[in-house]
Length: 160
Image 1 (cartoon, helix red, strand yellow):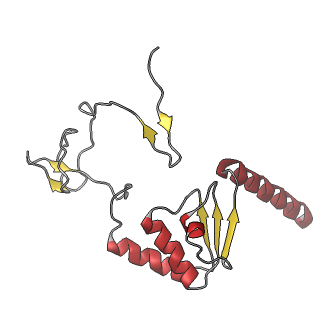
Image 2 (cartoon, helix red, strand yellow):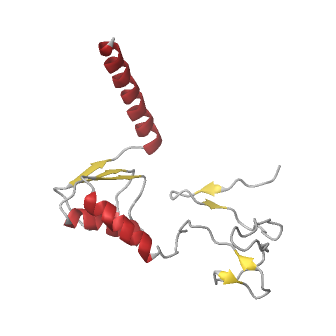
Image 3 (cartoon, rainbow, N blue to C red):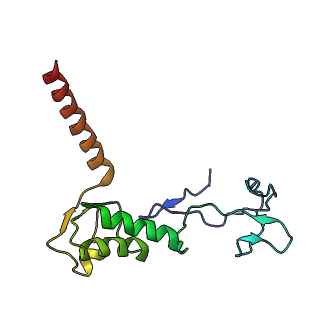
């Protein structure tokens, strides 16, 4: 076939090229029951020009703003944490970066598992509080799981 495969970007997005979403079937709104139209391109959450509802999930997509109440919850979690673990992120997005920055300002240790320099490193924040593991995420986490399984086997055999 002459179909070109989508190219995966480092952030996990894929470049799909010229794709039409006109035939996309969206689920009805769980609140009001209204049906949706894929071509409803209004940016307002609520009702589109044709009076049909536009369903927007609770997921915050890249480029969207994180609702204030979610950030308050996130800040409280960071403030209560003994440490922060960041996996697979460059921390380039401001919402993620400011959570790590807050942890560092609070004196909370931060560990990062990522390939490539992060925004925290570029800005020279928290050198004494920062631990960076420059390693592929999938392989590294798989090895951690293997290590935990082996440790669990050791502990289990000692208990017997």
